[in-house]
Image 1: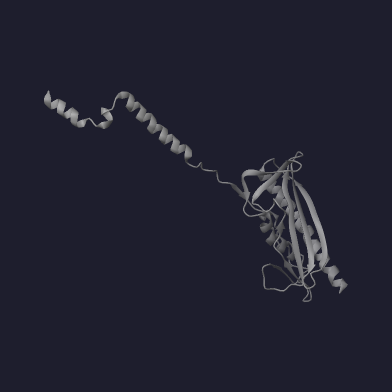
Image 2: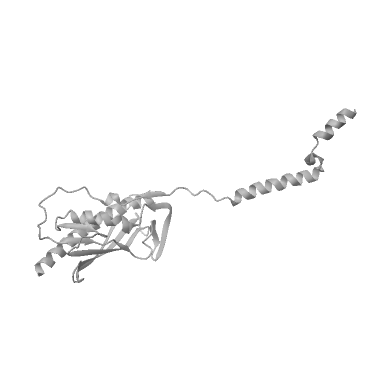
Length: 229
């Protein structure tokens, strides 16, 4: 009997020696600490869906007659963006004056930065200019194109929703800094579905429309400037 009691005393630790009520309190406290730490841990946000405006780039047209050696060189400035439109977040509206953003859906870059190479490609395809160069560049151009994104948003105020794209453009004389021509392009495209993806497809479509108009605008401005000389 004495040997058995000795074994029991050796295997009994401080935990088992506590009264039953205290042991329950200690267990409850431990669980509270575990769940409390879990609650404080940051929740993992879902990865956003990323979209681009590459679909606005038209297939390269067949090369025609090269521009004359006397044709002007056009410098394309980085597009600017109006307040609220210089973000990667995809914007939509449900009622006039209230701008909202889709959750977990973003552009891969700001629309203005994505537009820069598209503008160069669209204007270059017209064959009006000896060269179309995007700044920054060491090339000294004869004319400069400045653009500003005023609006790119999906409008749910009507059904089906529409994507509206507004772009302001200025053609400048690089030497005199005189404004040769200016225009505001404002076009819409119907979204195929009432969700961010439908809006992105419509955005690519409407941007392509405006880029064609912008290329024609640049060609007209360059020809008028040459006729004035």
